[in-house]
Length: 118
Image (cartoon, rainbow, N blue to C red; front, side):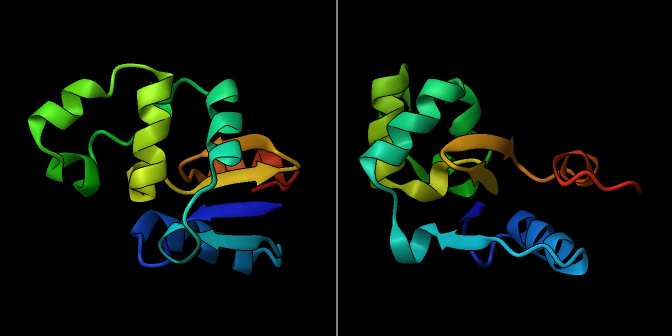
């Protein structure tokens, strides 16, 4: 199982803290240190609408020039943006064996994924 995100992102920190409190070990892939490869981006886009993967309320998106934002209009343009600026991806992203399990952090969703009772 792998958790994708950015180490200093507050939502990623919440997810990592939750996993640690429940003694669940996952591999952490930091976009800032390791980037994103095209195969992974394409795999996610086959499983999830690009509009959900691209965080259009985050700082990275808001910092883009308007003309750049307007060019992101489909999976292909979203993939290119995700590869160029992986911090635009909604975080954290929980994946197992290439399958997206959760986008963003929600404790009740994690409880279900890991078969835990509150």
